[in-house]
Image (tube, rainbow, N blue to C red; front, side, top):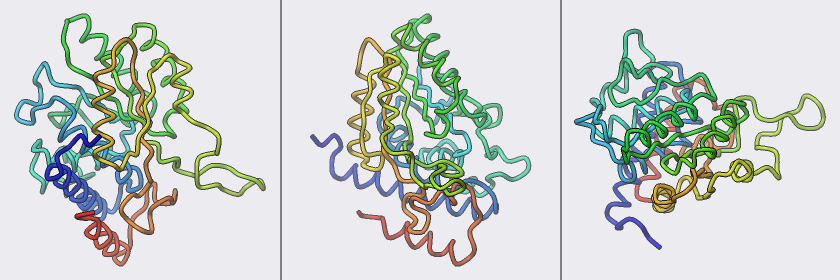
Length: 288
């Protein structure tokens, strides 16, 4: 069932394309930063910031706002781009990304930029922070929801599963983990023969099964289908009795032809020709 009116859905898709353009422009300007992960998580961020999450850019410290934590903090430029489009900062500020004294550092710093709910980048810690927000909300009888966006390389960290265990222990249905499951990580996956690399995540592994084993409610969706994302995230927010994990199937480098499914674009500087191609590819996605 369609969750979003056609005109709004078209607008959200345009926001996602605009965010991807800002990501590419900012990383090209800085000559540093990550590309693959920010491009894969863009639609998830657009669905949260423009529809599902209860937020107000004019009141970034509003006590009753939903909390949004980008645990995979190295994808910060994706977060900044979407926050800028949502009105948390001037869009032009995205070009200060990773510059000295900029509010937009390579990893999110909540002491510098209003609207951030956690300083992240040391992988594996964001779910614990989200757990604390969710427990705090229950103790204070607040009804805000906490959203934690994870990377699939990041969930190899043991602290993720310690937090998952505790969230189930307290039946924290006000907590949702969203896995940006692009099935890649920085250096790919080792394969046979020794020394060779498999680009994609080892077949036969489903992180949703692991979350379910820890007592979580699990949902899956196409992480680039904004309508499906919104439906799934709304269902996660409405679910009662246990925390929810959303496995969002995504493509690393989404929207740029030569970056898609290529772990080498986890973090890499574009040549001028590659930059122009990236902008052209993203522009071609508008209206689709």
